[in-house]
Image (cartoon, rainbow, N blue to C red):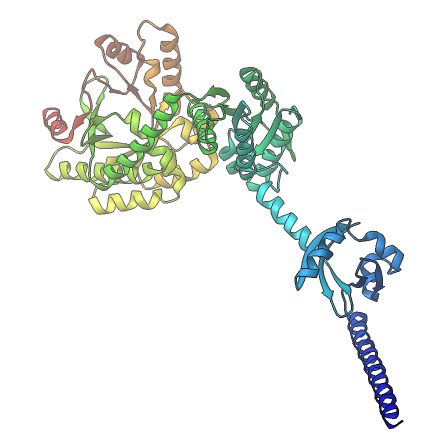
Length: 560
């Protein structure tokens, strides 16, 4: 009886214990759920509670703020289709993250599995702003903001894809000519509008199935054609299209294109393809633009040669390899020596004498001409001052100026420094500017020439007759002399047209009180004709080739 009572008591105690434990557990779980629910209620981001099988049991108030409502049935519908996959992953990890799009929102999701409750908590965060920012950055990285065209980085990506697919076609490097001229005349804002109009015009003519246009630089575009059926015909269409005037604000701007093309073959590298198309384009630009060329290996060799020449030229400037030669300028009637023109020469340590025709364009393109021009000016002044210091009759030395020197903004200081340091009088220096150079920006050139002329320095307009200067501008240029280009002399006396043009120029110059110089006189017949026509001075091989300083000194002494 006693044992039965004890057994019953134990049983009652055990039941009471388990019931108590269960009750406590429920109370604890309830408290934990209430705590989690309280956090969820206060969370500014959407929080969902899902069953073990993925049914939504709860959505906090922030869900409505983001998604428009938080009805369980609605929230269930907008969950991603692959939700079960992410839930399975979350069971075996602490949590898992993924993104998906719902309507206009990109949602960043974190899933946690609560094993104690056999349920999932899904935390949502609106990532739309971040995704939009990333999209903007991606757009800026691969597209030009002004024109909306894909840029050079997108081109390289597309070319890599084309090579991977072994597609054939062609790439055309297209450069809008006259950018610098338009920039200096109308400013940066108008120039950019002009380039945008060009991009729009080129874009309107694309074959959307096979062609894509890219902006490759300030005034450069690349047309990618995959495939390319008629390369020359397509280039001709583009050249014709560009010649139509472009309206920008109140101006009609005229321009041309320089186009270089390279055929795409899958074995080509991306970088070399672009470089080769650019090489072909540069050849066109150096020839004056408004044309088209297809790349060939000779262009690559020429480009490498130009690079090597530029490097050697820099070395020449630094290592005193440049020399001056002097060509006499004589009185037409008497043959008396009146002055000389200083001409720069380059004595290469390996190649010997390099023609100015070869290295001056490279110097202009690379900007080395500024330093070379500064050296020529000072050396010519120094040499002339030295000759005069020995008691020789004063002569005027002529020095050529380049367009780069003119635009550099330091020319006046360089002239003053050369004269001051060498002690040469201003009357013993003449500066020569070309007709094409002064017509690039006549108003600014007139201002600068006037400042030079007021110092007492003589000014000559070189290569006259080959440019586009009008009589109205010629009257305003503060010059003392015009040098008639040798093109009007080399075929005389047989070419009557050249003779007629030269006579007109001489008469015009005399009317304006300017002296005249005939360049390139090589024969007695030409000399007699120049005398008959009334030229004031003669320069050419008939009297002397350009001479090194020591040889010119002998000529100087013989004609003093």
